[in-house]
Image 1 (tube, rainbow over the protein chains, first blue to last red):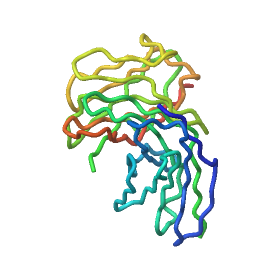
Image 2 (cartoon, rainbow over the protein chains, first blue to last red):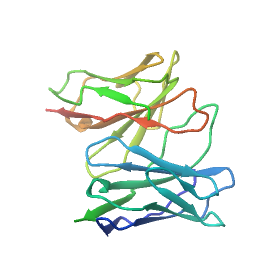
Image 3 (cartoon, rainbow over the protein chains, first blue to last red):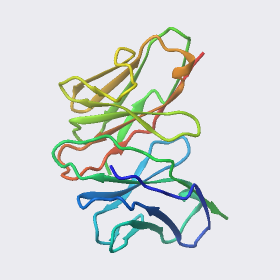
Image 4 (tube, each protein chain N blue to C red):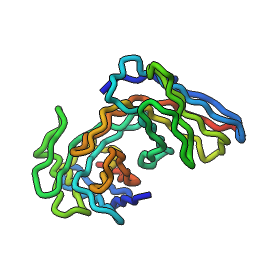
Length: 113
Length: 117
């Protein structure tokens, strides 16, 4: 799986959009970008994933650059409950079998009241 | 979304004893489940992949005789930490993949905090 680079921590004001960057310059053509988050002392939670098109769901939006070397996760209206460690993971889609996830250090997002 | 449960949520045991942790997929079938370990202020590390009806696959450096994994049904996998020692104290998290979902999303359990005295 391609390596990802994320800032170790970020602050965001409550109610504002939180934009979390991720660099994955060695991503290959068949690798997807996945985002998970882990609230303190809980299991990780899936947020969103994408290949090359921008994606949006009820939780967030994922913007992937045209060269796919970086992406941004956007939480449109951050709340205090969004304080968590956010992990950007790049991996090959494996529809038949399945592989465990390789977690980096992630970004600790702190939402300020 | 799909729900994965773990039991117990926390456990304290004496050194040398064995501890069993259960991971259940509540509303879907999971042919594959994963076990992770997370030490304080560190990221999750994959320990093993558990496939229903077959032997688990362990990551390099994880002792299969110490961390026994059983995946006897499509909704249950168990991790037994045998002869636990204080260095095994950690947050153990399982995840499960829905067999019917074509892309590779994993659903995580809430974790089990193990403290070995």
